[in-house]
Length: 165
Image (cartoon, rainbow, N blue to C red; front, side, top):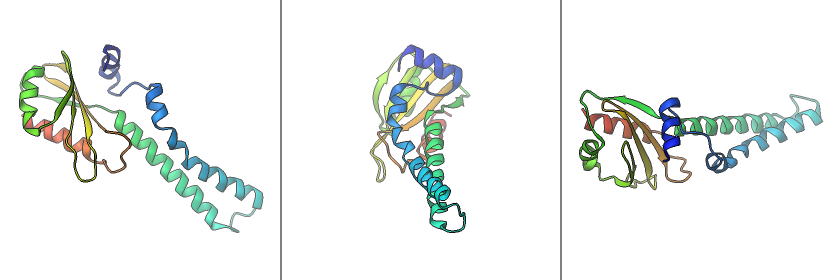
């Protein structure tokens, strides 16, 4: 994480949009092909009720596309955690040490951890940015493109919140 990224995160509570982020989600436009071909065939046949499978293509394509968009937004958002006590980043490290997370990057007011691998996941990155002594920003991103990490961000947020109470 660069200093510019951290400042953007503090201001917007989201990761900044970058070419790397956009290029990793180019596959998200694949469901729009289903929508395109469904609408194209409806226009050619000029009868809405002649082929209900085409509506299926359109609905499935739009559903998958919106799911991917929601997934992108959830991976970009940071959650704000207000603490009861004042902690510095080293004390936070000590409190989170029972989780056995691997520290990948550390700085003056930031930490990047790798959560251990579980059955349906090959691991997730946990980003912690400290705004001040009482406020943390927390984000969880999957390692790669994993479809089954729905609640991992909520689970990690609650774990960190309980550890720092």
